[in-house]
Structure formats: structure tokens, C-alpha cells
Image (cartoon, rainbow, N blue to C red; front, side, top):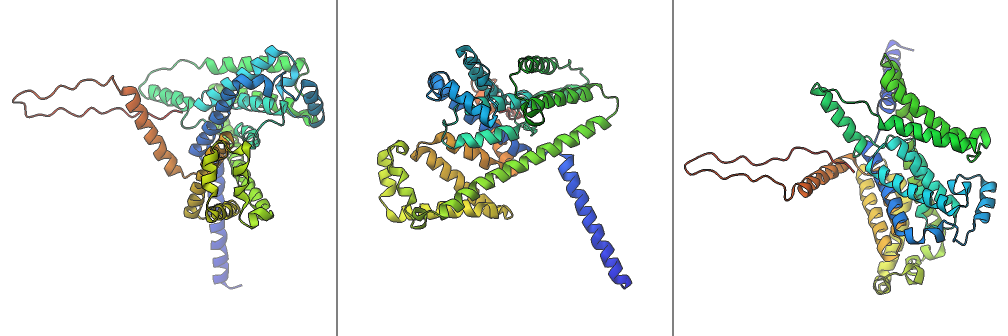
Length: 423
């Protein structure tokens, strides 16, 4: 091998090493997609919260003791598939009401971003407890929420647009002014209460150990990891332990974010390829039939109007298949991806109205949000911040006196201080 060939080989290896080093640094050095993760947190928590509130009058018929899927049937199913649900710990009506209210409360707090590490776990427990209690309730969106609730536990979803972020920002500002902020008492207290409840459930034999400890090991691992994080953050004498835990947290976050993206792609790819195999999708008439089912026709007149044109039905049918099949392949082209993403969000919005499936559509739109551009989300956050400032300052804006006679100066325009958007 000539010296030129050896030099070229060494340069290629050096470039590859630099790219590999940059990739590793990017994955371990920061939690990627903070705005996308925040939108997913807000979207799924809000969807589940609105669903629980809407079904509050019917909660006992859907998930409680008055439902057609009795407690005995649910117990037999759980014993077979070993799924987690706290509602199987007791058949008491009071216990059911406690679990339901806690599911509502955890959804609201996760949406606001208050103690997101703890609330994401409680949110997952609420979702699994209710959905695994009555497996035949839902419209497809429940499956998406079910999976995403588990993935959210491993994400650092409170970095932006959250009460946690606002609390940390105010702490930094206070320290920059030389002020001493008081110790955080809420976090350790919440950690202690959750540990006590977990210990009580463990001693009562309510949490299934299963294979390698199962849910029992999972919950105790999360509780111990959170305690270790607090201990290192407040008691470590050097920065190395905190850096090491940050790297691990970033790796978990980025892996969970990748799984969320892969899950969304898998949903669309599977749906699209199965549609291709259907004869009604092949001849372009598939959209016509669900619009004429009573269960999926909340607006019969609107359904008749949309299906009156055969060409429109054919275009919508073929367009749905094309968008779903093509979307995973467009992730490497930002412009095409954004166009198809807008088309899918519009499609789900139409499904919510025309077919009467609002929660399925909201769940899918929340899953689609992981692919939204960061620039668009930051712009959306600024719009929301300005709207929030205008809303809360209306009626309380100070009066600015006009210029006096003979005074050439003009009053300065009142400027509102920058207020960060919180969910």
C-alpha cells in the first residue's frame, strides 16, 4: 500500500471516529427533543384527563363493580396474563373511587408538569389500572395511551413547559441575585409517602413479583433511583456522580423517545399495509361504509354530504393508504415529512368530528407530535406566552399618563416582562 493510500485510510478512519464521538456525545450529553417530549406529555395527559372527566358519570359501569366485565372475570384474566391493575387489589367501591380520583389527579398534574418524575409513574399506574380492569373498553386510542404511558416514565418530559421547569428557573434566578432559596421539602415528602405506600402494598402481597420480580422490582427500582438522584444532587461533594447519573438519564430518555417514534411509525405502517390487502381499500370504497354505520355517524347529514361524491370517496380512500404507508419512509426528508404530518393530523381531526372518535384522534395527534419541528414548537410556545400575558394582564394594565402641555417627550410604551410558557 502506497503512502497516499495509507494517508487516505487514516483520514477516513479519523473522520469516522470524530463522527462516532459526536454521535455518542449527542446521545449522552443531552435529552433530545425536549419540546416534542413536553407536547407528548401534555397531549396524552390531557387526552386521558378529558376522557376520565367525560366518563365520570359512567365510571362504575365502565371500570367499576357495575360493569358487564365483572370483578371475577377480570380477576381470572389478570391471573392468566399477569397484567398490572391496582383495581384488582380489592373489590370495594371505595377503593375503586380512590383509584379513579387518583388517576384524574395524576393526569392533571402531569399535564401541568408538577413533579413529573413521580406523576409520570402515577399516571402510568392509573392508565394500566383502569384499562387492564376492563379490557373491552376503548376505541383504539386506549392502546396508544397504554404504551405511551409506559414510555413517558423513562423520559425527562418536564424540561420545558412545566411547573418543574419554572421552579428550577426561579431558583437559578434567585441564586444569580445572591439570594438563598429554601430547601425543597415537597419532593422528599412525596418520595417518602410513595415509598410508604409501596411498602404497604408489598407487605400485603398486592404487587405481583412474577418473573425476575416483575412489577415489584420495577416500582422499587424507580423509587430507589429517584432517591439516589436526590441524594447525589444535594449531598455529593464532587460533580462526577451527578454527571454519571445525567448520562444515564439522557440515555434512557433518548431510548424512550426513539421507542415512541418507532411505535408511531409501526402503527401507521401496519395500518397502511393491512389496508392494502383489503378489497374495499383496493377498489377505493372503504371510506364509504363506516360513514353509514349508526355507531360511527354522529352527524348523518355530514356523512351523506361527504359520501355523495364518488370521486371524493376514492381520493380519500387511496390518500389514506398512501399517507400511512409512505410516512415512515419520509422521515429522512424534512419537507415531505412535514407535509404528510400535517395531512395525518388533519385526517385525525376529521375522524374526530365525522366518525365521532375524539379520544382516538387526540391520542394519535399526540403521538404524531413527536415528529413536529422544534422551531415550530418554540414559535408555538412564544405565541402561547404572549396570549397568556395578554389574558392575565387584561384589566390590570397600569394607566400611562399622557404628555403634559409643552412637554416634547412622549410616554414610553409599556412593555410586559417576558413570561415563560407553562403548560
